Every structure is written in structure tokens, then in C-alpha cells.
Length: 266
Length: 296
Image 1 (cartoon, rainbow over the protein chains, first blue to last red):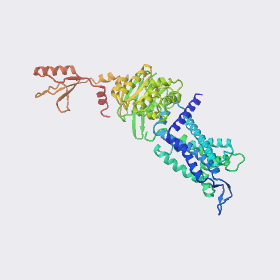
Image 2 (cartoon, rainbow over the protein chains, first blue to last red):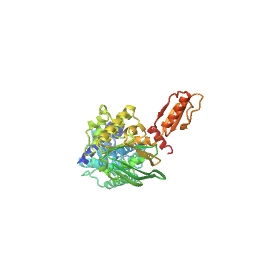
Image 3 (cartoon, each protein chain N blue to C red):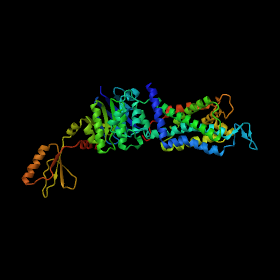
């Protein structure tokens, strides 16, 4: 009981910390919305070719042609989850590590599990809010459909969010200090988003084969399926699940083995 | 059972042996001052006791448990003030104290703790907006909120202005009055002298001296006699004359101040000289400390 109350207190404290920090709230929450507005407006009315290639006259061959924003809104929702979980957590934890917060926490009876639940729980709350806002903006401004399969959508967000939190924590192992955190995280994940077709959807066998090794691709596919952008009767995409779970497990092992509570200089 | 027991503690970082066989014990309810120059091994010793570092050798008990394996149960009985105040910067004073209190089975009321450290007027202020001194006081509040039996204070008043230091001293005294054991590390001799029941001076990874502040001072049974150099005469050497200054002041150190003074004043009366600015002083604890750690 005490543990549960402590964990809830941690979630609340992390949420307060996030929304009261203007930089965190902007880059971790409103930045993806800004991208949705820019790309969504530019390409509104265009078509996306999901799982296909463009033919000689620009027609979608071997895939499903949908309005651009039907594709882009769930893809941006997926990006939002990666931002609120992986990016925010990697930066937040390295900042905490550098200024001694982690060390201070470790000197108290705060259970490590409750501390991690606080970080992950807070990130998941932000992720759910961002996905909801993304869907709302997409629906209101660009007429993109509401998520076709609500339960798979929620489960996918929570599951994917947890995996990306684990990866974010694991990334702190290779990030030397807080100053370097944003640069290192961006260099790792932004190219991966382009490679994984978050902004423009068309199939390229070689690129897809590379992208499929990484978790972002599968997660985006799962989000497209749950949102109904990809044809599916149930909204569950179990095909892309194993890669995501493997990355989550690997990240957890790295974190358990190499996580640092203090900065290197200490 | 002592609150803290350290026997032949050793710790190396690579080829550097930072702690070279330190032993001491702290009784329950005692305020124990750990003093030493930078690099003496203070921080390493304290961090081993706090559970942050593993020792290479020796026996360590904190409240009867090994800090390396004591885990959460031990941490519930110990309060820490680290050298840097580090808490979630966007929470308010009240929120942080409340949050930390929640980690302990029987926390003190938030308002009482905030008031005790003199932050009642800033309870609603976010941590990042506090001054350096206020942040240290918040750290003190976080060490107290769990109502611990043992408190580690690592240089708790560094960066305090004089009145804030006096306030912090009052808090430490009230901790002692409540029967809590306090391990205090400090750079300030007057702080150790005012607060500590016993002082342990370490230098170069070893214990140089342990004792009550007064006994440490008495141990150096040396007095200093100073007076203005009288013009045109040679002063009798009633003790060891310490060179220094511009020669306008004579400084003599002696282990027998009564005899030395007698000889000196008898001579002066015979010469018909009044010794201007004559004074006899006991060495301060600071002098003792500098003497003991001179070679480190």
C-alpha cells in the first residue's frame, strides 16, 4: 500500500515538474503538434500510398491510397509517443543525474521501482494526452477519422510508450552528460523516423528492410492499424509486435546492467 | 551499541588509497564532527557510511547494519544532507517536503519541518527560485522530515551568511536535544567547536586525533605570548621565539607560560620598560587543526 502511494506521489511530482518546465512542455508536447499543423496543412488534400509504390503517373501501385492526413495523424501520434517517452525521459534523467537529483533520491527510502513507475507513469500520461490532442486537431482541422479501433489504439500507445521509456532509460547509459543529451537523442531517433516512413508513406523494399529492424517502424505500423489507416478488421497488429518487445527487453537489460545514478565526474 | 562503528576502513581509487585504515565509533545521541583538509578522505568515508560507495576493507556498522546491504530499512532511519542541494527544481518547498515525507513510515508534519528550518515564508516558492542558503535549509528539512535516528550533515552551512549559520547551528542543537545522532563534516573550526561533542581530525586518509574540542586544545599545552618590541633592547628568550611579521611584535611560544611570564615581566620591571600590547593566548582549535594537518 505504502509502495503504491509512493509511486502515485512520484507520478504526480513528475507531471508537475514536466508541465511547469516551459522547455520540457514545449519540446516534449507542443512541438509534435506544431509539426502536425505544418505538414498537415501543406499536404492537406494530397494522397498517401500506404504499403505501395508510386507508378509512372503518380498512382499508388500495390498499396492503399488514402488522404494524406488519414496516414499522417496516426504517424504523428506515434511520433508524439516516442517524444514524450524516449526523448523526454532520456533528457530528464540525464539532467537529474548531472545535478544530483538521482543521487539524492537514492539516499532516501524511495524504492527504485516506485521511482521508475513515477517516470514511466508520468511519461505515459503525457503520451496519452498528446495522442488525444493529435487526434482532435487532425479531426477538426483536416477531417482525419477518429481512431477506428479505440481499445487497440490505447493499448498500443501504452505498450509502445512503455517500450520507448525503456529505450530512453537505456540511452542514458551512452549519454555522457546533460548538455549532450538533446543532440545525441536527436541524432539517433530523427533519422530513424524518416527511415521508418513517419512523414511520407511509400514502400521501398531496401529502406523498409532496414527500418524493420528498429522499433519505430513497427510501432508506427501498429498505430496506423489501430487508427484504421491500414485495412484491418480488428485493429491489432501482432505482426510488428515481436521487434518492439525485443527492443523493450534489450533496453531493460542494458538499463539494469549499466544505469548510472551519479554523473561521471563524481 | 554505538550508532556508527568504523574499524580499519580502507578504500582505493585505482592506485590512490583515499582512506587508509580509519577507525572510530559514534555513540547514540552524540554530535560527531569529522574534520580534515580537502582530499583527506572525509567525503569517501561519509559516502561509504551513507551507502553510496563500497569499501575495500574493514568493518562498518550504521545503526547496527552494514550500509552496503542495509537497503531500505536502514535508509528509513537515516537522514542525509549532501553537499549539493538536488531536488526536483519545479516543485515548491511544501511539495518537495511532502513528497519526501511520503517515503518514510512516520514522517513529521510538513508544516512543522518547513517552519523548523525557517522556510515557512517560502513554502509556496519553487525550489529553483530559492537562494543558495534557502536551498541548503530545504535540504536540512528533507533530512529531518523522516524523523531519523541518525543524520549525516555534509558541510551543511557552506555558503551560509553568518545569521543563517547561527540558525543552522540552532537546528543541529535541537536535533541533539531530540536525542538524534549527528555526523557532521565541516571546514569551519568554530562550527565543530560549537556543535560537536567530539571531533575526529583526519588527514591523508588516516585519523590524526579524536577527542572533545577542549581536550584537543588542552593537549597542545602551549601558550603564545605577544608584545610590542621595545625600542633599543634585546628581549630575554623566555621561550621559543617565533620569527615573522615586520619585527615590531615579539611572539614567544612556551609550554610553561607562568614561568615565562614571570621571567619576562621581572626583566621588564628591572629595565623600567612597560611591555605594550602584552597578551597571553591559548591556541585556538584552528591552530591545533593547522598544526595536526600541517604535513598532509
